[in-house]
Image (cartoon, rainbow, N blue to C red; front, side):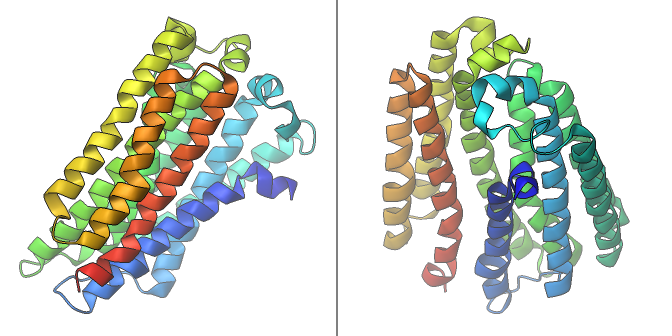
Length: 307
């Protein structure tokens, strides 16, 4: 159980769940009714998910290794490395998971006939290490990088499912669905960016003691909170624009997005503007998780409303 907590199994389940939604709730149904062509069979897609999870798990481990001092202040009861699992064991797991993930990525890239795609896995693995060891300590840069990587966990499905199968005949359809995935990746990027900023506000005491230079430490909690409020408006306005531009023909999708995405984002923005305590920021962080979940679950509705 300690190892499962170390790799943050709940977060990994969320990644796998979203990728499965993309494959079987969005791409697979429309490949049977439109010109959409997908590349991976069940085995190949399973390898993509496994590779993503291995690299993400390795990233979680290296992040915890570098965060021990901070976590001893911010969440001492949840510290695993040094208490329940040795740092040496954690490093070994980090290396093993990275090697497995990258090797699967190498095989998968050749399986789809695009050997250059292998670089994606290497870059993501390297960026997770650089983020944990260096970028996380820098004002906003670490927040942006990790949020980009979260978005890539969505976009990588489109890269492997859609891009290798593009032909002159199906190019418009392939690009349409790739852009849908890009919009969802952008949504995930923005939600995670806000959440990373909120977590910095929540963890300011431990980060300060560890010598980190996060935004709240650099400019103060109040100013950082107002900037987080401003950034929280981006997914709100983006969601409203998405509904108004693409979903007006479907009352079901309009209702879903308004009730489960837009209204909660308005609530989050208001709470962020008023938040003062660690408890407030923790509540906002949990609300952002819910919005992310409901955003991804909306993929289930496309085959219903667009059939």
